[in-house]
Image (cartoon, rainbow, N blue to C red; front, side, top):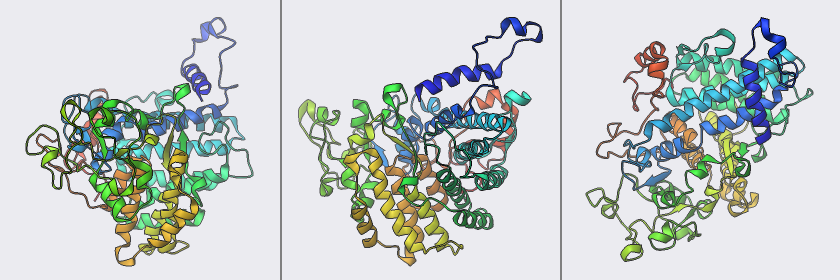
Length: 531
């Protein structure tokens, strides 16, 4: 991937600038790539990589991972970044991280747009053109989910129209257009024609891309269950009829490559000694996995060896099921009323003297989550089956019962962990047996489905997706943290505020978008579908 992306950066420049007519012959490098010889397939891995960067790394690790109480931390203020998520309190670098979802999502959409336009002009590359559309939709939907209204119709037009200050479209209009375009692009994918090359998701398998398109359609449709149930039903049924993912082999993910400079940003956020000490699985998550006898618990959590130094070391800890203990959100190490030692059922610390640590008995993520060449998940079979289970529960016309889809999803959620490596592998037989023993109960179906969605996406480190589905569904039912000095009035944030540069670089359009938010550009204003 490294060579492809280096080449891309050179070619991107060549596509955007040209010499004057008077000096064309003198100033044109005969070795420089041009549109005539450039293969648009070279843009695909960059679109994919930039997208996974938009949903991984420090932004979701410091915000959404703790907003939805998958992780917890006792850090407080200043340079202790985890207070952003655990306690909704600003740290020194809060706003420097906020731009990352926005910038990377638009970079991904830009690469996908350029790829699609080049493929269209070249002809005989319709599958690549339609995959470019699907990648744009994926990226812009994520931006809209996180922020609300976004530049859409006038976005990505700087090269062709000169628009550098695009207007913001309402999230409602964006979603309506995204679903229309997604349907057209997915239907148009043709397995009898040439597939893409340089494809980091599916190796050019058009049939998998078609299933991906319908699975993405299902996810976007289900976002609308509260705000536009008619559209939600229509497109969920179209997606189901078209054909969504059929097994964990369809999971969309990208394998990072530390050796060549493409680092798993989730792992990077857990790599330092301070991270090892500060970050723990939350009480909410550990309690959920324990209550359900979930075999993932021993694969993902460990109690570090006793003592301060041991807690900051990567040495493997104790993964015994019974010994796992989640850290409650909202506590600190300051000695006051919110000190962790004052929490209910505090288990006591470990070590003594300079080696003592009050949080030593709480479970932290295992080493698989610190692998900087590990997988970055985008959309999985487990998620799709859970959404089909919900669609069936809601009475939508989909093949298969809610119970069957739920069983498939629970098993798949366990099996997808194998992509982290042998240490996390759960066999299909074990996963199926567990799913059979933990069936869907009609009276609690929506709760079960969406709690499982939360657990699965969180364990796979796709925290923005876990947060978005929590906002949509209301599950799990979380108790907010109301820590002194928080930026959300003691409420779990419902959106991210716009990047700081928008207010100055695109002021007029930014102000119009903010004016449409019920509470202004705040963490608690709700996006259109979040009712």
